[in-house]
Image (tube, rainbow, N blue to C red; front, side, top):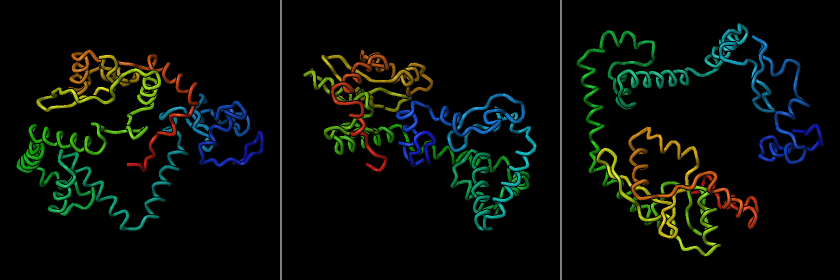
Length: 310
């Protein structure tokens, strides 16, 4: 795409494309679009005249301000119908057949509250190939006996893994993590000196502690706690001067405190019981500032793992 300010050709698929306007022209994407690309009636709802939201440079603004206006637009409704009809007509018979069969399995699975495999077997046994047959099938075959049979299968599948078996699998998982990474690591986004970190915040705090010759431990031995009879392991981020430190952003901390499920509630109680100190957004800012000033603004990014890394 050619920049209309400096006539520089920029790859619109590159990240540099989005930073070009801000870094070189001190403009946001929206400001650039409004000045140089905006067309008459852009940003105004075609149904009610209210302002609409900006999408991006390629698509500009939404045509409507809300779903209600969009649904009331006769022209849009006509185009939607034509689009669906065109898509179906241009797909091969086998593609349409396969799509309908998958939708049928999903519908049966949701209706009987069973797995996809059970739904597929059910459809196969009763020669169901598309959703149009379901009303007839429900009337003829959806009896209490069938419901009871499917419910029993689902119940047996749920109870197949006992709490003891789950605990055994968890132990195996932790053992594998220790053998592979030396620590109990669930998922890591950064690798620094062959040490795995969950976030750039943890890495920044780690480097700050090391640079200031402060004795600390990272990723301690797991602390055990239970959720409905199932053993869980909580791994504290740091131990500094006999104080356990956990790094959480404000959003995750709020979610943790909410106790919206039993696991979060039990984990937070475990943290309180062990006097874990939590560093949040404001607490971590000085350490990020230290990294920026000493090593450079983008220093931590070089340690970020790519999606293809294992």
